[in-house]
Image 1: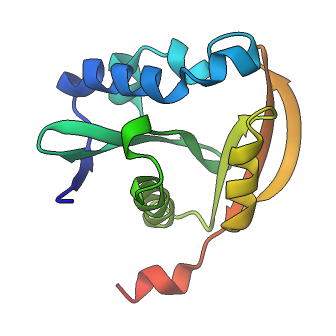
Image 2: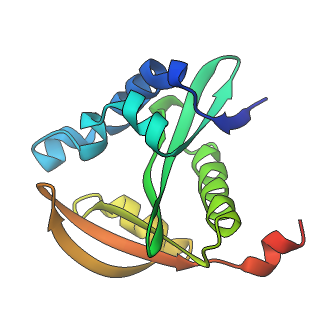
Image 3: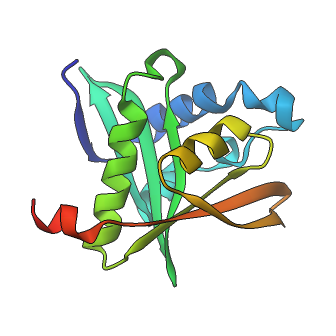
Amino acid sequence: MSIQIRQAESFDADLVTALVHDAYYPYITRLGKPPGPMLENYQEVINKNYVYVIEEQGSVLGLIVLKIAHPTFLLDNIAVHPSHQNKGIGKILLKTAEKKAIESGFDTITLYTHEKMSENINLYTHIGYREIRRVHENGYDRVYMSKNLDLTSYKRK
């Protein structure tokens, strides 16, 4: 697989919207409504945040949305197209998020997921995130998680 990661541009908004729809669609039944990322205007998201896409031959395979939300660096959304899940795309995106957090001066990264997305909670726990709080926010029951970043591994690169 010959992939590249790059910052999203305005012209990516339609592709990003379609990717997010495909990635989150299976959760609608479980949550009883569309997950929050499906409701976003990705033209605005791209213009206001750090958004990175992974692409292969012009096809967007995955994306991350990152925000500086003082006092934290927030991984606001990560999505991988269903046809490319379990192929390491998410891992690359998560590493990109951690690197951007460190470059932005943060030693931790925070994310959230819906409490009914137990596979996400398990995955994030497995890779070093710990639960920090549960809240009902914007109509969703969210689990916030945080990870301390290994600053030394990025300084050597």
